[in-house]
Length: 267
Image (cartoon, rainbow, N blue to C red; front, side):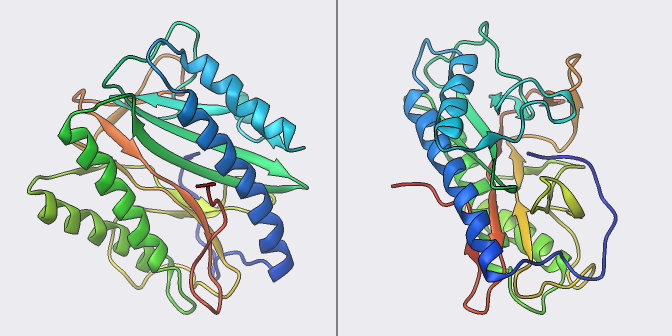
């Protein structure tokens, strides 16, 4: 889940090896919920039904949906379809159709630890531009993950995400918009913690990454511009120009052996 900007600290918050294992357990619940939602996302299915699928998976695992009730958010997932970037509220009235581009963001709390992850997928066959948009967003996230190394600074991750987007643009032969004003965050016993992680910017700034530091890395790209607006529900963020958007996210830890994804999904 995305939220506002936070103040930087000198070091990105870090966890012990045992605490990372506990976070990975929470993250695995999120991963299973996301896979179940994708399997259920068929034409004629409402986004509210997808929300019910996710909540059932989370509660069956003995976990709690971290989004539900968070600052008044009414659901267990954010379901953002087509031009919706993030924070889409699932409803019975919103029914999926062939060709829709769906971004699902999900969080769970297990034994006091948070997991937070998102991905974008199509309902049935989707157009090539939407496929490439989702792929570009995933590649940007993976570039950010690769920068989760001891000694790097926060904006080294931001810069890596941006470079991942630019590399995808060259590969795909088109431009993507990096959504302005939204990004990742530290996470642990709270879902949103300092510092805020921008999805672009100059490297070498902000708090340092140390072994055990954890960030939710979540680029959001569009097929058009970078500007967004919030709808009347005070949650749903849409592209101002109506272009489609994609959102990918993993919770990731810095370790001595390289980046560790804590929100792995079952195959």
